[in-house]
Amino acid sequence: MGLPILIIGKSGSGKSTSLRNFKENIGIINVLGKPMPFKNTLPCAITDDYKNIKSIIAKSAALSIVIDDSGYLMTNAFMRGHSSSGAGNAIFSFYNDIGDSFWALIRFVADKLPPQKIVYFMMHEEKNDFGEVKPKTIGKMLDEKVCIEGMFTIVLRSALVDGRHIFKTQSDGFDIAKTPMDMFPEEIENDLKLVDDTIREYYNLGGAK
Image 1 (cartoon, rainbow, N blue to C red):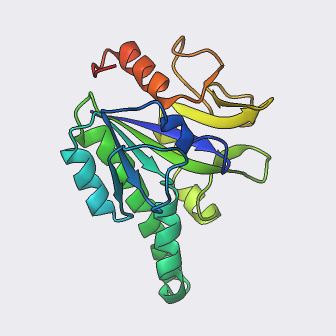
Image 2 (cartoon, rainbow, N blue to C red; image 1 turned 180 degrees about the horizontal axis):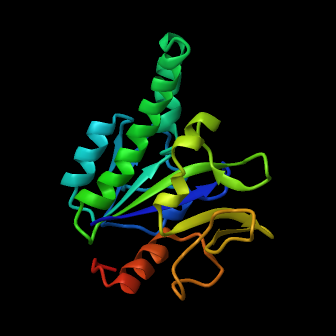
């Protein structure tokens, strides 16, 4: 089984920039087609089609894959279809389809990929009514259907602290950051290559450093 990992953070908090130290063995699925925030020659596919994304992940020789701006898979589906979704049962079905598709992608990673493959889902964050930080979706109806963070063992939160871009690895009581015991200190540099190497060593997954 593959390993899905969630990374959340505000826009500009360093999620995409964390890829800067990868030189190989990484593949990027760019949902919005935005340029990366650093010079690079990393392989990148631009798509928000779930079928294409699954195919790319399955066929890629890279053991690590990043789905950048993965939350926009839901947003794009909503923006394309909300005006024609109707009301009542039809709108519930519309939201269900959006949630089902995203849920199925995470399950695809966990159930269908070999154990050496890690897929990072990068999403924006938002606060709920209780002041808790969570992945940004498209509303309460979807949140009630799918607890996204509950589908991940590892959740990192990208943040800017005292001028430093860091990953938080443990919850402060108001966010959902979490990692297995003794995998990381509470804060680490926002270096996804370091994260990837550490996870592979912790779980004995293999993969070139």
